[in-house]
Image 1 (tube, rainbow, N blue to C red):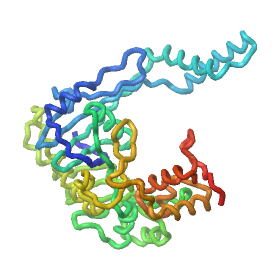
Image 2: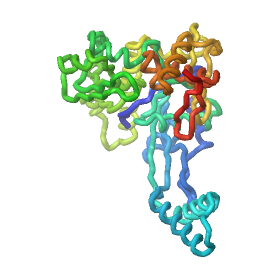
Image 3: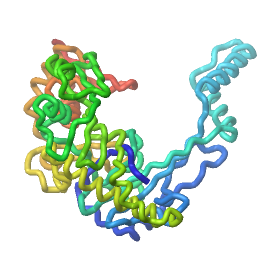
Image 4: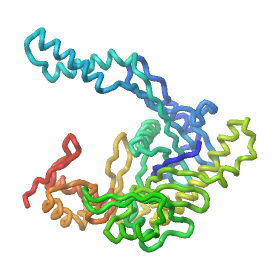
Length: 394
């Protein structure tokens, strides 16, 4: 029940579904096991697992949900070898090379043949919605899995207007300032672990563990113009965690002082214990998230429609992929556009991360700049491997 990794998203419109309404919508996408010839299935299960009876569990206005994914495991080397056997047999019998279409057909036939004998891998992903705080929190170490859950929720509800938090000052810049100037809030304490990156896609990487983050050794990394991309922290004598530069939380651990608050509940009453643990955990996380966002001058209501006056573009997850939606007028060109254009033409390299690091801006803004460069034929669309080419000559 206790979450250990977090991805936090904000609603851009208030979440108004009740527990009963949400449960009714989730019933349209309940999980069913894979059939013998099916590769994967993804759907909702009881929020409290085998101990529960509902796909939505409510505790103090927080709504707990859980998505289950079953995937058939087919070893790629086995499939490749079997395809080659069929190709070799065809070449031997017909004296010609197999076409690309024939190879693809061989592969499809082999997968269909192997699926009934394949092992299954089942993973559950929990999340909770706090309408009062305008957030949805996903217990996952992978952004892809977190967004898969959001996509499934959007499929069930028909719409899910959410966005990632994106502070005006980049997360890595703020984290670096914490270590340089000790400017972190009084509810937070530095831990004993951090990761540093030098500027540039090929820049040096340094990791320290069991190390005083105010020590001279750490200061040397900062003096060498490295910036912090991960840092271990403690909050309010209640929990410890590692904060990443995308505002995700890794290795979240609640201290014993929190767990002990429910020790008086009869361990034989599993449902009561699960409910109490969820209420306690969600309450602590809601306070923690509010304090953490405050360190970046953010509030959980910042992304509600009309709450921001400046021109910003946030990625809104409205379907099975992230698409851009403008809060106000997104057609205006970023004032960094000309500098970004000059940078990619001069270096002959373009990526969201390189622009993000060069200009010390957030991911979403860097992605928007790359999109503007693509629209103006400065850079190409991403290729099959995700890389782009610079089209304009120096």
